[in-house]
Image (tube, rainbow, N blue to C red; front, side, top):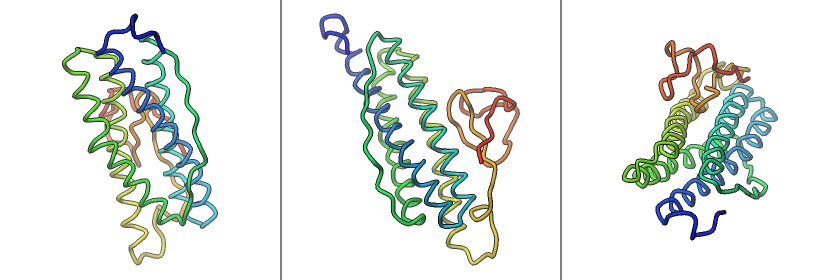
Length: 194
């Protein structure tokens, strides 16, 4: 990180928030990759696809945060430990709890801190991650309902395509519009993850 003499106190606070967000996204990326493998092992291939798509989105969020940190003249360094993996159902519950923490507390707090500074670069990175994480909450909540449903076959059990915006990480189960609802990227530029 830059010396406190070079960076204003406000920028130091934004950098701390960006670093926290980066670490959280990298931790979540690692967990979701492990959760995807567990879901595949459990024969829940659609759930595995969803975890892979969400992991890819978390990586996009991390890359966006890291880019802003570098833009502000600081360096990034993070160490991520091994994730704790349980049953696919428990992993899904953990994912919902994690995403709820980010959408209800983490990103709104970080966004509120950037608004008075007119720091549009950091605010955009936080806003995109917030919108992406909201899409994950919606998809994970649908998956848990489907796991609890007494239905022979649904998307949780069979391989399924998910679509991830390459700019902001917004994730969708199907085409929602011509453009990303979070960052306005053309739908044709979404990545397909299975």
